[in-house]
Length: 310
Image 1 (cartoon, rainbow, N blue to C red):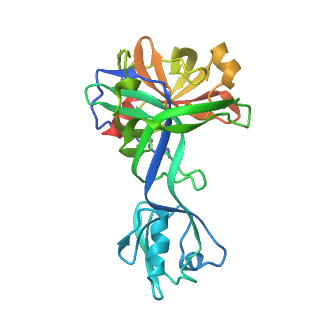
Image 2: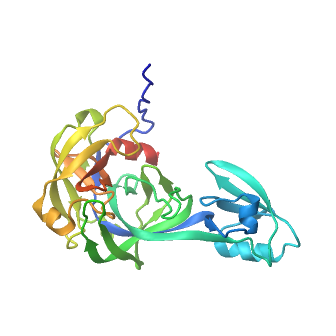
Image 3: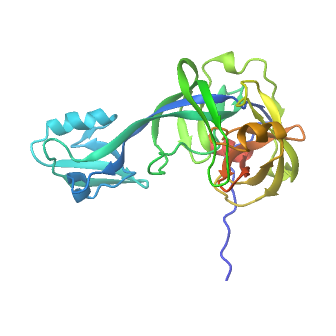
């Protein structure tokens, strides 16, 4: 018996037009709580049942905003501590016995990186970027964000993608030049408001395409990754996964542009979010690369990004 494939249901109305961006930006964000990256062998945290990926949000009814809060709270504990964590959407309490004021956890409470803005909506002054979530590099867990910013980025190197070894844009955020805030982190992108018009000046809006209008064939992506100038690079939309839930892999794409292939080897980390234009319409964004074939990757429908932002 064949199992049913979930059908996509849209909750948000697709804007008639959006401004495709393609700018590589710095991303800096603070987590909502402190994420457990690992626990020490034989530690109080391990004995109590804490695991990598847990988000510590409360200890003894005191809010945890930053990793430093945990040491401060534990210093005031006489004996046992009740540690509340978020795990897979659930809140769980663990009774932990600190040892010398420590419970033996490695923590993360902020993240910095490089990514690409996908679109700007001049009507709502909002943007979408990445086409996928910000996840923790050690645990693979989507980070619950309290707040964050998108900034200018200093790019230092492009590491070429090779089969089995995905490339990447290497650089750091320029904290002095802030373009916008981050209000939400979702499976289909990060979203927020633009606070500086500098990044959106002299940009043209394109009509947005519904899923039914997207077809296989030639398209272009927009990116300023190579030399800081926003340029079009040709790709081929080779497959469309229409009408089903695809986790941000709505279409398969192949890079055909020789300039891009010579400089990056195809799709590299940091290009996620690059807008895709086909027949003069804004159809989606680059999201993933095929690790064993960096000339190929996946894209998300713009409809799905807008739905995630709702």
